Length: 160
Image (cartoon, rainbow, N blue to C red):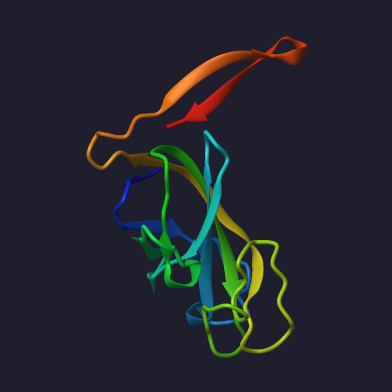
């Protein structure tokens, strides 16, 4: 499980080398796209690592916090609210120059870009897991209200 704090950057060490999909290219031709999904409101954010260091059996990724305009290409996210998030890590490979930017790297796991040696291709899911995002200063409040809806079902509404 990954543990992080809201409004701060964090490092992720993920076992990737044992789960490599595209073994036809060197490890230096691989980057990892991370999909974060909030357990409560189901919001989704994507990010490549701001830095990605490949070790013998795992990859170390650095994710940055950006409050105004997160940039997935630069590894910047604005994960909110605190609580549990799911993460999925996708392998993206290049046969030519690795360029993690708009038009050269997929923005989602389903993004298909025009074919080219300098364009990344999503190879598949490498790993997935849970992440706990703790509050930075303890002032964040999440309010749950249970309301009855039609068809005799109860729904939980999320609000701040």
